[in-house]
Image (cartoon, rainbow, N blue to C red; front, top):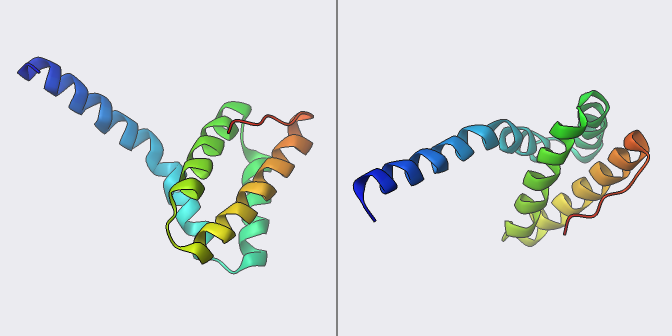
Length: 99
């Protein structure tokens, strides 16, 4: 790999990190809330989000769930993801499975 190719790849990786930060930050906030509070926050998030933002959050929430190694945290994320998808489907009128 040449230096210019390396800089380009590094720039693309850094750009993805910057784009994903708001989503990861939001998911982290939900994880630090009590269950009822987190589910209310998810409902507020979905209600105020555009379809493109919902699609991006879906990707990050799904990846976070799949990659979580702590069983209890992963189970909680599955509940959050199910709630997110249910609310997304109610808002948009359709269910999109992206697994």
